[in-house]
Length: 294
Image 1 (spheres, rainbow, N blue to C red):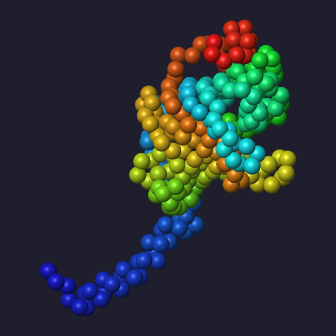
Image 2 (tube, rainbow, N blue to C red; image 1 turned 90 degrees about the vertical axis):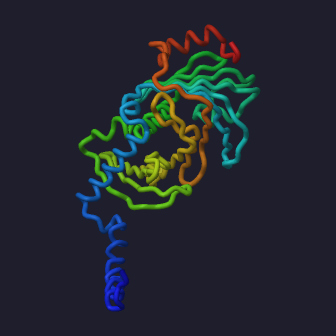
Image 3 (cartoon, rainbow, N blue to C red; image 1 turned 45 degrees about the vertical axis):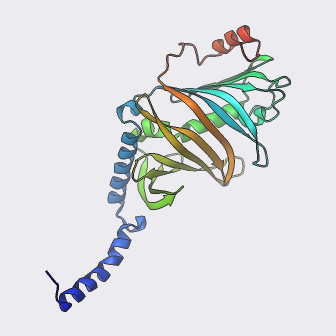
């Protein structure tokens, strides 16, 4: 059936008139606050389901082996360090590093400059809530207070903690941040603000519903300036029903500060009951003396 000339012109005119409306519909600033919040929550629900749904929400522990890039003060790559990273969510973390030779960058990487790294060996960092310890060839020591404080802030910025536990906070604000292309992916941005004036911006893949980027803006207490921490997630693989990013890159104010490559991960692994305690580090030191390979 062929349209008449008048009908064709009428359709074209209607399309021209509706185009600005379609453009405005994709502009987050033109969406009513209630609709924006509803859309943001819908995207977050899709994200949680994409990451594994009940298996993701029910994840209490995670352990991954891999390599961490040693990045110098100038941002240049200076090699890799083998590590095993273990979490008991939300705020217990233990990382076992294998340092080869005199690794002068490892202390800088993990925020502890006083480590005994003269001959390499096994170095462990352990955080448990408000406490932290290190183990090296010199034994087990208390973590510096500023390093523990930085870890506690990182716990608040952790996207897994936010998605699995933090979204229940009634004081959170939600906003749809619009569509975009990030790392060659079509994404929706979701913005979340908390009572501490942190602003989270999550880039969610529109096709896979997986997290592409997490951007957190906080006020630096030392400088009083706004700081932007970016985490980039790539190479997702299923592990125990949970989609785990096997490559994670972190940037601060546009400068790369950390990059990890996981070789394998376990969800809810059978860890010892005292694995995240100081006593476990003391026992590990008795067994190894801080030397690798034992």
